[in-house]
Image 1 (cartoon, rainbow, N blue to C red):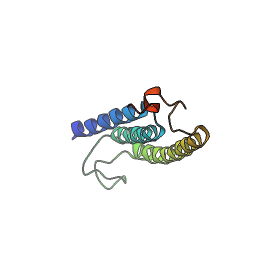
Image 2: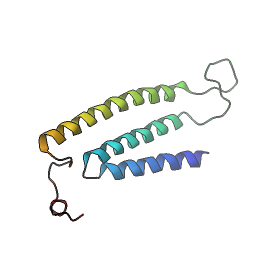
Image 3: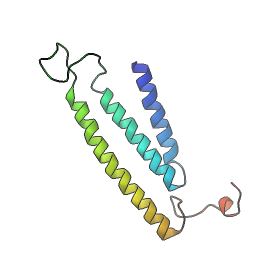
Image 4: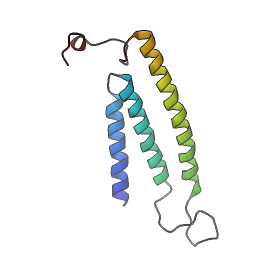
Length: 115
């Protein structure tokens, strides 16, 4: 189970970094979102993956650590605010510059119709 979990985190990090390196703003926003999902999964896994563990003390001999869960909830809220900010920033950049490229300049091969 841990191997599958680590593979999912690694795949999300790979896809997030790949999308962040794109030249348009929408893939960059998706890449940041995927990277934040990977960080959330990593934080959740830092509390040890355990089965049949109680969250409330005294209910079982084993209990789940609530601190990583609190970190993940906080990271979800911060990630949502960051995503909203980056979307508004990319919409503003598109309106001001007239294109949606990250650096504001359209490459020559795209201007001429070659991709």
